[in-house]
Image (tube, rainbow, N blue to C red):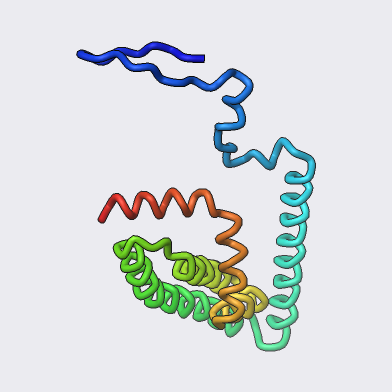
Length: 172
């Protein structure tokens, strides 16, 4: 099916997809998983896992507060959050520089993106109060674990990261 479009001086033919093909050409919206049972089930189980993990972390905090006292526990928790912010910010600068260098070379920076995503996940875990989340954040800073988690996050956000790459390429 063709439609006629006209410019100021020339006329051209532009192919328009048939109505049935239009839906296959569209990109899925961000919350597409909410309308499918499998996606919704995965989302709910992820939320359940997260809430159970945070409850476990809270239980550890309660037990430790009884042993070492609430003030020392609060000081340790606040200091791990502060250390996490400092470590993530200092590492982020170097990772962002590497990423921009690869983009300037015209290469998709998959490794750098994975490292950056793992670093951001580690920072989020270190900022959230609790010893289990701090342990997870420190574990994410270990390169093999961080690259595995970065790979998972990169595959989860791949379309958005491709758009980010194209945007950064245009910026150079």
